[in-house]
Length: 113
Length: 112
Image 1 (cartoon, helix red, strand yellow):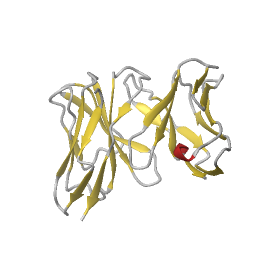
Image 2 (cartoon, chains in turn cyan, green):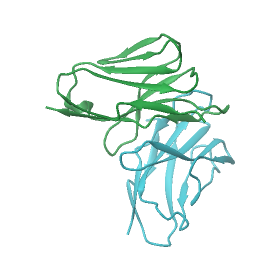
Image 3 (cartoon, one colour):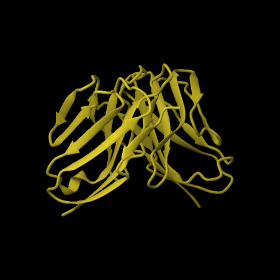
Image 4 (cartoon, one colour):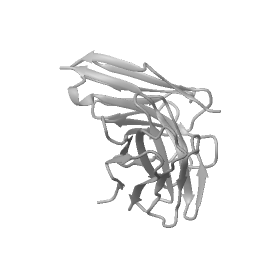
């Protein structure tokens, strides 16, 4: 089946710890995106990548890092510099053209211990 | 920058009622997308609109691309409990990329 997978579904982070959220797609999409969603809030763009080996900061990139070494994978690292990491994280992909539909993964909920 | 204003923010309705929500932009859009997010899941595309004045249906859902190209509407007829969730409108960002701008969402609750 074609789609986007995110793992894990739930993730716990200790203070001062970096954690990495996985996002994989087999839709052959060029572009991938990471969003953060807080309770009762909309989607805020963290990072996006239009093509392999290239990525751009979104609206709230501070405290996060990404890599795009493979077309199908776009992992997000939540670093210790992100002081309020508790949120629902959504990964999406698209063909990357203007106005193209983005397809979302099931999300990862990150909680701080 | 571009913004999307979605209203209402939330709705609490009785099963069987019809629902209307809308989205307005400060600038012209060439595409309007409507997504639904079930609790604890990722958003799923409901309807995509590509032409001013376009009216598109998907089952009990109907969406329209406003003639001014600055707004869009989503209607749900005869609501059922599984319609519960957050509905987002989205449109292309101003840059020449695949970025989307999302509205803040309309949270729908349906009372059986």
